[in-house]
Amino acid sequence: MAQAKVRKKKVATKMAYSVSTLTDYSAEALERTSAELLSALKHEAAAVKSDADRKVFRDRWMARKNGILTQINDLWLKKAPKESKREAGRMVNEVKRAVEDIIEKADRVESATPVVSGIVDITLPGVQRSIGAEHPVIRTTNEIVSVFQKLGYSVAEGPVVETDYYNFEALNFPPNHPARDTQDTLFIAGQQSRAARERLLLRTHTSPVQIRTMETMRPPLRIVIPGTVHRNDPPDASHSPMFHQVEGLAVDTNITFGDLKGTLDHAMKALFGSSVKTHFRPSFFPFTEPSAEMFVSCFICGGSGKRGSDPCRPCKQTGWIEILGCGMVDPNVFEFVKDNGYDPKKVSGFAFGMGSDRIALLKYGVDDIQLFFQGDVRFLQQWG
Ligand code: PHE
Image (cartoon, rainbow, N blue to C red; front, side, top):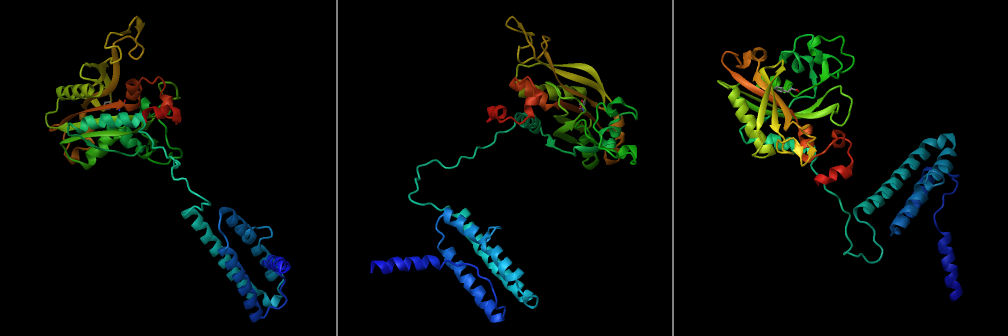
């Protein structure tokens, strides 16, 4: 009795399916051979219980070197006599598809319901996915934008790849202005055959969106424009070839420089605290007249230029920090969009533009702009 049991077991092991050479290529023989194989396949698939089983199963059938599919290719198809090649090929393909189907199903089960052998400890922590944090520059940009939204400004955006027309010409830059020089502007290559105003470049400021918006929206207009800009500057602690700006534009009848000062003074108090003062110095931009640079009293040293007995570095001991460029929209700019209701005799406006990276550096006391763009998680996590 005991002996019989042992023998039975041996027989069962021997019965594992193996591919044998085909001699009979008649339709019935092919049918029978493929049915045998498919029945073995189903049996083996049903016996797969664990990840390890699944791997063995997959290898046994699919391994490139000596897997069953490879074997039937070699023994049944390649060795078939010429006149039987077609039929044999059809049968082998059918079998292959069935095998791949079943194995794919087994794999899908694996990814949907992990096979657990034994007991699952449901008190173990799951896989933790860390939630990202808002990037400090984006956060600062959003804060600036929301200050103006509360004043009734809408958000406008425009393309980063711009034409010379929007970036320079319609902003009243004369044809040979040095800003067009490759020293400052990054041009898209291979544009020589295009008309000068159509040449593509990476916008050097967000001001082209002033024109684009005035082309599509009639006055009165109040918009803020956040976005990335590029300049051909070598990277260092305070320069990056890519940086961020927030632009503003207000156009209506009777807008004055007083409106500009009042609006920006309010915005700076909202951003840096109600005790900061603003200060304007004459400047020049081709698209504003008059133009100014606006400073805020240093919110690090309170305007004294000193921190204890040390010099205040962010304001270079002056007590003032330059924040933005601004001015009254030059009538020459309105001329480019006159047909959409911007007659310089009827409307006036002010515009401003600030670097949000620079403001983020100051706000968070970061001393190197490169840190914002290197993607070091240890740095960025501090805003998490
Ligand atoms: N576009 C200017 C710059 O990038 C800033 C600016 C915007 C100045 C709007 C005046 C008005 O320097």
